[in-house]
Image 1 (cartoon, rainbow, N blue to C red):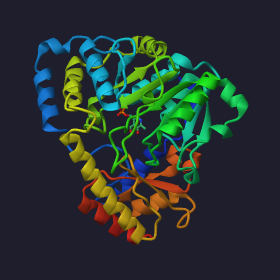
Image 2 (tube, rainbow, N blue to C red):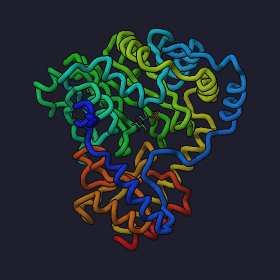
Image 3 (cartoon, rainbow, N blue to C red):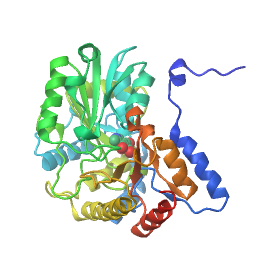
Length: 393
Ligand SMILES: Cc1ncc(COP(=O)(O)O)c(C=O)c1O
């Protein structure tokens, strides 16, 4: 029998990162030690206080039953306290909070909950690929791109969105600090975004996965410093980068009770929640915040990535590439248009000297002409990567 995929799966664009994996593997087989700066997976180990909590909680058999679908009460309480402490918001636990299996799962399932066949979803481009793929395509919707141009500080222009698209849009994604550009936004921008969402009755899904990942004086806001819980807004958070817990698969969303309830109803029919021992561990991580400031463990992680970003940016500039240190995330988004028009070609050349980076086109058509470096190797490795890149530049 011929196995046919569902039409929606056939609409999925080619997965560029899988192609790169193949090139990388070929090189590895030939004995080359690769330096991978492609994937946003922190190399810094998870802090000991978190690992200790995990070991303790995992050893307790009481923590191995089915969890509650929307998250344990104690988890939602801890999330609420953290949000209020960190952002000065005034949220209540319960109907406004839901636990997610990492931010990614919540982002994808919000589509199933609110997007019908041919509904429009406004997606930043370049952007985290899950918005246009996992959310929109798997919900049979239509992604309308909001281009993020460098000359506009990688912020979308709401006035440039066609009236008809805005009218028909059901959902809009925004993400600052931004993957892949490293851009951040000010509260004024969030006010405009909220006005736009309210005017056109669009659900605003604000992806704040990198809220803690900022450098210097910049502190990332929550959309709930502007919006209230009656607004059509949901905000996603993640433990992955802040606490180096990518593999523990836990996150949360807060927002309008009807939106949270729609996401909850979807999830109830798909997954059975996050292991209780992981939720208990995540609470220990959140409680390391004593006030709005990042605790020492988080600061250490951010400082390390900040130092690496300095080294990489300086080195890239010395090689004649226009790179700037971002205010947030651990990504350096580099305009390579003067060196090479095709970012895939640039990435292939980098792989030929043993350096793996992400092509901008992997994040959408407006990512062409850019490549993304993630500073997930130590300074020595970054210097070696620069040395290798000097051979192709
Ligand atoms: C912008 C953005 N949102 C969400 C996620 C997903 O985070 P999580 O690991 O919590 O699923 C990522 C991960 O790279 C991301 O870059």
